[in-house]
Length: 123
Figure (tube, helix red, strand yellow):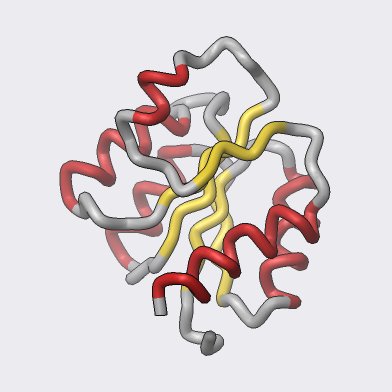
């Protein structure tokens, strides 16, 4: 894997965002962060990203709305959902074909390795 693999990491929890960013950077990913779907949309419009890791429940534009927007333009982008809630329909989430749904609280290193392993399998 090379350092050019760019991950867009979206979560409204600044502490989790920073820790997860560090965990992904430790595995040689380039990480761009956003605090909600509106910020993430702006990043997507200006940057080439290789993967999206997004929280589902966020203000302004949630993760499902963000992925709906992305799937309109890039149907093949690997997506990982993060959530602290079990009330999302598995059918709805699976309709977006996520690589994984990561439930909070989670181990940052394990979650970062989950993302890395996706790229190792697809290369």
